[in-house]
Amino acid sequence: MLNTESILAQSLTSQRTLSFDSRYFIRTNSNRAVGQFGIDMVNLATLPADLIGPGSRLRNVGQGLVLLFTASYLTEGFSLAYHEYGHGTRNSAIGFRSLYAFGTAQNDAMRAKTYDNIFSFYLRTFYKNGGFTLRTSENAHFTPFTEEEQWELRWNILRRAGGMNNEMVYTELIEDEVYRHGGHIGFLTAYLKGKLSPSHFSDSAGEFGDLNRVVAAYEEHGFRLDKDKIDSGSQIAFYFSAMTYQLFYQTFRMFTGKSYRFQPWEYRGLQLPNTSFYMTRSGLSHKVRSAYRSGSWRFPFAVEHVFEGNRRTEVSFGAEKQYERVEYGLTAIIGKQLEMELDVGYRLDKWFLISAGYALYDVRNLHGERLIPSLEHGSTYHDFYLRASLTY
Image (cartoon, rainbow, N blue to C red; front, side):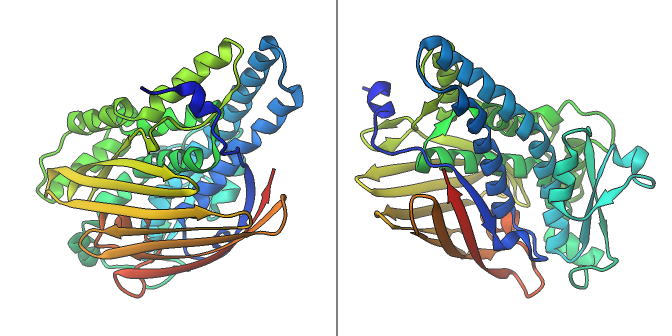
């Protein structure tokens, strides 16, 4: 039987970080690095809540309300920026330089002020609404792919679905953060918005609506996929994710005077699974993710299956270990090709953590097509990075 009180009492301590990642400053675009920046922003929202301090039930409710307000303020803009960044990274992966702007593409493309730095764009989302992404071959990262090359790769599907896919990637990063370091109800808005992003865009009208453009791209390549199927896939990801219910449950607990912090639901060391939904070049997929914890070891695993379109399956599994000063993790993704991720961290003291990592991406995999930063040198990309983190 699931015992939530024992889960909340687990020895795993909450750890928040503010990181500076080498991938922020290089010309290739990293969904993973910028997504982790978004996690850092949500965690910053706990600072004003902590100023209230725990104590009585009323003070706990006050903490939670302050957290929900500040987290919503910080993450509403990031959700917009990360959505547009999803379009931008798929443009940049095939050579184009991406530009971000506010407004709508059909009305403002010729006159809007553009930003080629996603952080500059994000800072302005606090007082701007709506956004779109343009691509240009001027000052391109490398010679952009021709229309024929893009067609052969079905890249128009990924470019158009990139925003919604990125919002779903962000929910996976939230799930990983909660599993590794503990979580809080400040993730509620961004998580639910990400899970339901394709469902939300199913209501958009006109040929320039994201989902209409995705459906049109699928039709161009012979797929019979309509908005209802995509809406249904998004709804399934929402309802078949344990984190959805846990965030609602923890919000209810907060209003009854309990802590806004929590650990992920587990049963005998097995994390209750979460589901993601993606629009891939092969069709529509669901990805089910879970993990098993044994002492200080953690073993995440996932299965992604294209259920509508050209059916295929991809699996991933990993191992993570944390010592007093050293922590490391290794993940392998097995699809049509092998991908891997390796991260090693060393804690200098209780405040500072230095990390280094390597990732091998392959565009022939479902995972790789969403996240590969560049196809300049072929279908694979070797990503090396350094990260310095302030922990608090």
